[in-house]
Length: 459
Image (cartoon, rainbow, N blue to C red):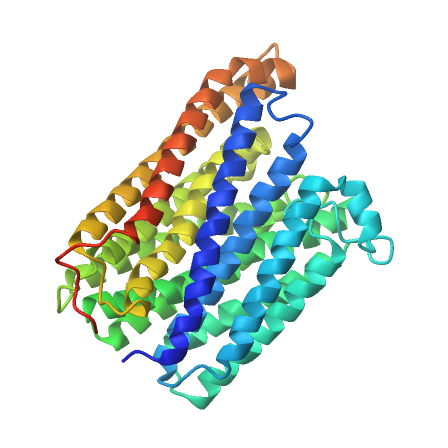
């Protein structure tokens, strides 16, 4: 059954894809600046392009999560959304605040922006991923709390399921851990220690709960497998996620001045972090193999399966490559880290949001699935983006290995910039793979506008 208030997810999904496109464009600008140092300088310096690239990533994924929650929760709770009007109001507030922040990065020098936005009252700016001015951070908190109120009230008045409970746990955790972005101690060790409470405990903790619940929801819908079976898998996955992810935070504490025992705790528990991602992959394939019906939306099934595989490779395998302290001693902060980050974010979070959009948007528009012609195009976009991301990861890994060897292991180590000159070929290859990714994203967007005579019947 479809609920009328699920339609509020549509503007969130559209904004998410638009911001995703912006993120990729700024990623390509940065990639070009790696090989042509004065590209678009001084209009868009590298540090500004990087801020915009990473901030757009966070904001568009948050739009995606919020849209997914607004779509899922009414269906899981078997009741209309508590306040659709509040959901639409929050959409415009968040969109305007996000756009204003990005424009501030682009057109106002960062130090001036800090002065203009009250950073002297409460210093929160200047930290990677958390560069947002104080008013933006406060706005995010207000939007998050109002969003959580709306979602929680919907769940409380309707049916309670394991999927909606795990989703709520993940979303509340996202909001609570963001509060540490306001704590900025003068001691650099303490600063980095608690900074990871936002960054790591988001992406390797509570966001994984959101990922698990979204994937479970789609798999129930497209496979027809009993809810009890899928929920048991979900409980196993989130338990493994929380146990390994929370203590695994220690793999960021190796070299920042924290106690030495973190090298053991961080190594052991972060080495276990691939397990929940492997379980997620087995879960997805197992459910599809046990399916009781052939769902007309083949593209959404492909995205769901791809999420498990790519999350395991990016977050699991590439994370493990450089997570043990004796290895990390040499690889820390190299291009190997960038390789892991790109594939992990794409595999775990980008793909699960695209899975939800692929499944939900046709239904919101009155069809069980897009036409076969549109789905073929969408599956092309899946392969273009996924293969491009594999190449981006491989090229950055090669650059990282060469960088570590020349700069840190060799008997005659080279300086940083001299080393960068030696790996420039891999940066060019990464840029070409990035263009291929953009083509895939454009193909994904176009697929939603393709009509066909064989389009699925209206629900």
